[in-house]
Length: 414
Image 1 (cartoon, rainbow, N blue to C red):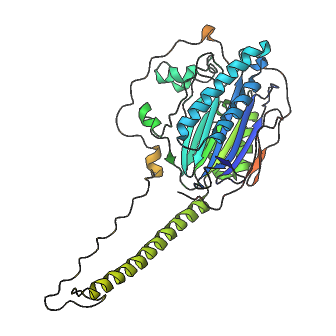
Image 2 (image 1 turned 90 degrees about the vertical axis):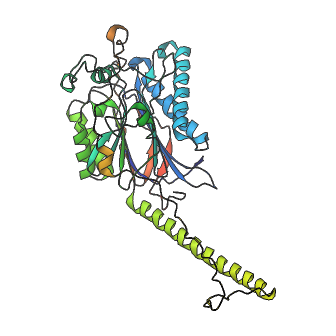
Image 3 (image 1 turned 90 degrees about the horizontal axis):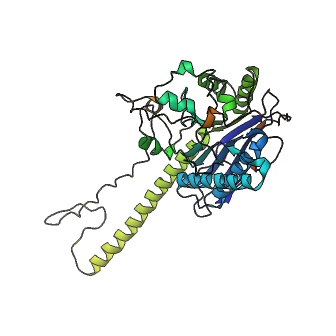
């Protein structure tokens, strides 16, 4: 794909080390592309990775994840985005593991990952670990991703109730991560309903975003301390960048025990309306051109038949006597557009019982968390505003990716 300086989504992002004095092991990147010169469909990629391993260089693992996934997407042709994200995450995991084996001080490092790719108005996403993806639409918030944690599996299996989660000793034990000796299972499920099967959730890849939809990617430093309803309220009541800042501040006010990183993406209304208008204009112009061509061809046929002595009515004449009227042209059947779920349908669960919960795997060896607390303090990087602005991957000040992000004038090809 071709890197571009303008994105078709408004974006805001911020990363903060938190209040505990630990090193910021979070990394993120936002980059914009178009599929190609002949297919100028815009693409935006957002990647967020939370390093694990503490003193074992979790930030190195997170940086490898963001860089390698972004590189794989940039080198691709933009086709099959879900499979592209899946393979890129698998490659990043292998790269992290190899890097860890080459340096004793980095052995055991790993990272979580959430990646969202928006192609035109279609959403594709993949996750490993407990970094999350939310969708905010029409006054409601929905967690599309699934946490890969001991707690989530216990909830799914009915061994814990939601009231048992807070303060649980296994709250930070993750079940999947990048950098493991074995290939991680990348989660392609986008859960639009609590009663969906896994196959149905995977079938939601490529779902169409609506005007003013907001996607939010975050590390567990936010989701551990800020409720979903508070995320919704902040984003509905403030400009995008201000909302991100308020959410970071809220997490820090409640202890900020972990790194806090947020990426927010808003689907703009004006640009989508412009696309629809241009699409209608193209249809009208196409029909007008087709009608003109049909008129010219009819004239040529009529002239040829007139010269050959065939009995035929000139255009606009009324049939008389035994003359037969020309057969009519069947009406054109418009091609239906892609269906888009209504805001109410998106968040409503169908009737019926949820599927049987999966068996609960045993906890990790010793029940230990894969997210120990490091102790090296680093200064907080500045907040990033992308309306328009320069997006710089943040962590402890290390620049990884740089992209100019401003609203795009059109979304060609939709």
